[in-house]
Amino acid sequence: MPTESTFLLAGLFVLLAAAGWAMGHFGERDGDGTPEPLNLDYLKGLNFLLNEQTDQALEHFLAMVRVDDKTIETHFALGSLFRRRGEVDRAIRIHQNIIARPDLASEQRDQALFSLAKDYLHAGLLDRAEKLFVRLSQGSRYQVQALENLCRIYEQEKEWQKAIDAGQQLESIGGRSLALQIAHYYCELAEAAMRKNDYGAARHHVKKAQAGRPRTMRGALTRAHIARETDDNATAIRLYHRIIDEHTYLISEALPEIVAAYKRDGSMNGLDKSLRSMVEDDPEMRTLVAYTAIVNKIAGIPIIDECVERYMLEEPTLSEFVDLHQLTPGKSGAQSEALQKVRSALSKLAAATPRYQCQECGFSSQRLLWQCPSCRNWEMQRPASRVQFDTVLQHSITKR
Image 1 (spheres, rainbow, N blue to C red):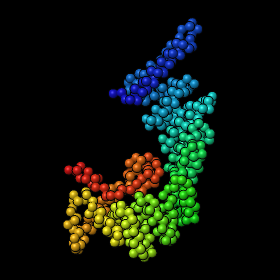
Image 2: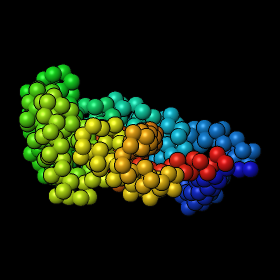
Image 3: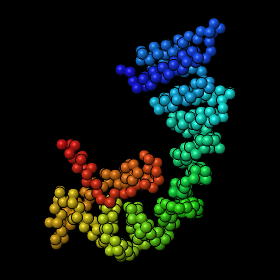
Image 4: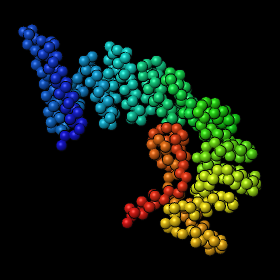
């Protein structure tokens, strides 16, 4: 059966044949006034198609049509078709042939360079794509698109300072704010500096990240990490608590750090007191504290253990498997052991299911990703607030 590509190419041949007939009929004529006969190359190309020899037809088409003012748009369309089909080498050859024309108009040259840059990007040839996009970013009509693609390339290559420069240039000409995106670039530089124990540079980059609006909570979290790594426990605790107060969804990242900081200070009573005050001020925090404790296996702190126990008792799906209310009165050794087994099972279940999900595209992951790998948006992931039983139930139903 002929493929969709075969029909597309057949359409191209028919259109080109019609154009050739029109030029022959209304354009140049022989000395006796008769039109030029239809080029037999068109029939040869169509014969390849009818025999489903698509590759031969394409090669024949490329050899047959020279690049001139009448056919250049056809070449651009064909190059785009090749790229969409994944035949990037052919798309590259077409666009290189266009660029090779010595009399090519500057606007058409920019169009060919932009198309070739996209070919290189599609093929993963980032260095070649970067060179062309840099050229196009210097005042061509593709300046905005070139800078957007440069940001993507620099993100992949982790060239964060180059990404900042391209993003700031894009802001100045594009008329839209990239403050959040650029802030994350600075946070990437800060985290790289921290890995080298260069905390002065890390602080400098975080300050840059927090200078714009909107601010990224990643900057606040990085500041707290710097305090932690430089043994400034008091500052770290204060910053982690502020992060939870301002953005409760980051409790999954901040609470384990708070527990560790209080342990280093040897002031676990102070931790219990501060967390108890937090959940009393906002009862909805109990579920978040419980889920975070289950995921990170945090235990032995009275208020946290109370939140986890209450969560287990009130979880409707869990009650379908075990009646925990029969285990709670009296808190005997056997009952405590049973509760601990349920808690351990929940921890294993939470570890086996995605913990974060992108609010933009739904991409799920086990750890917090500041940039979604699927939609490429920044700071769109949010953690789950409850153990995800539906995944296990679906798996159980599938196995039956």
